[in-house]
Length: 249
Image 1: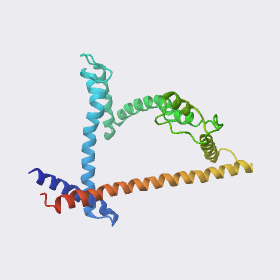
Image 2: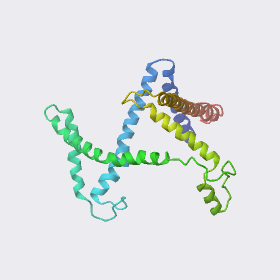
Image 3: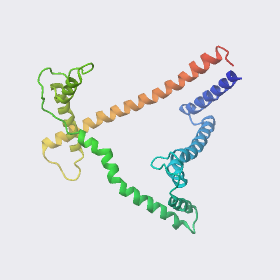
Image 4: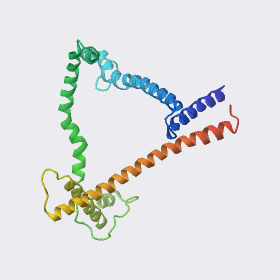
């Protein structure tokens, strides 16, 4: 019974995979059928995930005082959380022409809270990048030129290796800083740059941006290939070779 169930389950997965990839040939009803199935399953999963991963722990458990909730371990709930329910339901008045103004209340509250949080969000996202962009460009150790492998070293020696700047590190940091400044100079759109050196530096930044975008595009293509390889392995090895050819059904 289990073998038959596994086989038909995998067969359904193969049909779904072939159906979705059939769009590579052209738009067809076979693809649209499986597209609607996928969107329906995704919508149903999103509703369940919204409750289990967000609303239950972040609102309902706090409201009723469930044990083990993060930030709350007492038996009594925070009943003021109940006020969030009517505020959230006001958003659905957007479908009413007469009372659509009520939908702006939760939107305004969300936008106000979101705007206040963006300063901290911005710093959490970019603060570390700004700090990491400050690189030492002068070596502290001139020999050896390359940083030794700290694996298996005494902890004190490994810490000393990590704190020193070797020639290879300095060269890498110089390339990084030049790239950073060149890319930033490309975005000097507010005023006309007439200095030839700055304009040449800006042109260098444009080429470096193109190299970076090319690398990102290449990694995206490789990621798509990894998805195709995974699905082809599922069809040809897991389903065809292991079940159909060996008769495991």
